[in-house]
Image (cartoon, rainbow, N blue to C red; front, side, top):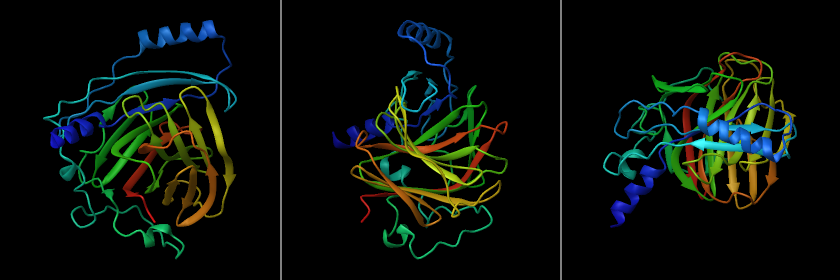
Length: 307
């Protein structure tokens, strides 16, 4: 019974994508209802991921945000059914992407981490993906974004001027997650980062988004499916390597209501919020000045309950 429950849980956590669109004028309640109706009628079903050990389809949502980060928004999502329990890999096989079994591709140049980097005291990650295969992520493209894994590199591309994300399967309460990432074609306020504590992986319409911009700023937003709130407004920091083809290591530490932001082993700031206490994580990318901006990631690591 326990094994069956584990498999069913893993099946339900298979990977999701969602978007936040650019600002639009505030609308009335009746107009919101009309827009939701149109969204549900017009949105095509997300494309099906290629067959692998765990076949998955991407869940796609459309979010129309208002001009201010604290105003309301409309959010709806279409979801396909989860793969059957027999097709989902076991927890052991999913977590097999470890430093000893999966070589890590490099994103030159290599970052030299300072002694203050929190991972130096954590020990081995609870989960680590070096993208030896695509078993932990949804593959393919829809009308908003595309994702692919090749040669040990995950590539997530924004196909429109919206933010899109994909999620992987570990779910936790208190954890630290980080990734080594760069964009080879970004400029200005183009951005990418980590989405964490997503409470419902099937909908993927809530969570915290920690990102950096190509011109060297960091920020932290909360999206609750209706309101986008800036917990940390965009702030320039010299520890962020600016421009395209610059590798940055982004990390976020979640401990109760405290969210600590790190870049390249340096703590940037902390924020406090208790809206989301548990959930999954993933990667997002957003285009503002560049057509089809991408984010390239060669490693993502997760520590449960780090001390």
